[in-house]
Amino acid sequence: MTETHEQDTINEALSIIDRALGEMLHRELVSTDEVSDLLLDVRTLLTTEGSVLAQN
Image (tube, rainbow, N blue to C red; front, side, top):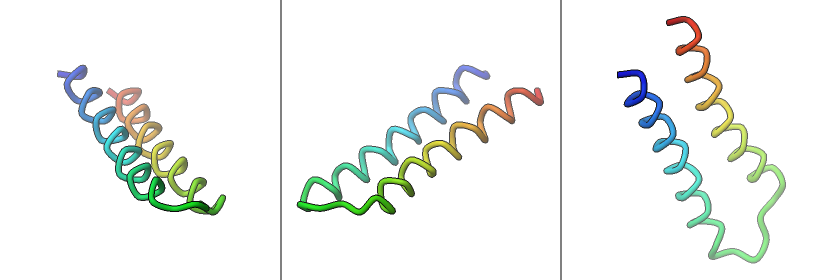
């Protein structure tokens, strides 16, 4: 069951990345703030998952 939950988290992170990349492909410039926000969103998602697994 843990593997399924981990895979769901990974899939969610990939979805966030794919969505952001799709939006950024249509632009010539992307601000560092937008890239930082994307990386922080993915990091938060992955570290939150790690904390939950460590508690179990």
